[in-house]
Length: 106
Image 1 (cartoon, rainbow, N blue to C red):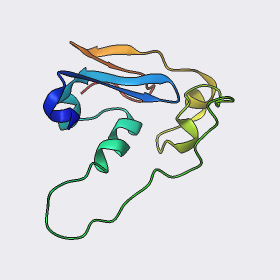
Image 2 (cartoon, rainbow, N blue to C red):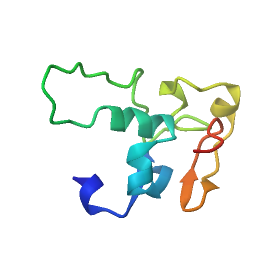
Image 3 (tube, helix red, strand yellow):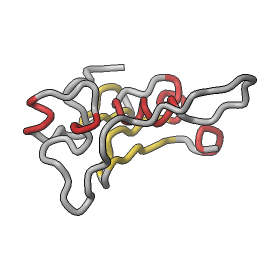
Image 4 (cartoon, rainbow, N blue to C red):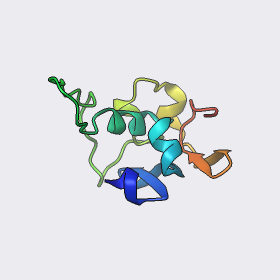
């Protein structure tokens, strides 16, 4: 539904924006690992059975979030930098921002 009615989309994880982009760009190429995981599980009208792939790991408490990137305990790309330093929400293309140390561009 969001894909068809919104011009821009903000993806949030534990109260922080992790990606913001024009809707068409985000649905065509999500960049943040959390945005990728979310959009991989969007229901589709196709024949056949799909297997749900939940994001691995425990959801951290929003009252006591992890240090650094809040998504690092569940992120397949996380390293020491992710655990220690909160990534800034930075522009990586015109109108597109991502908060991830590992994303360098679209």
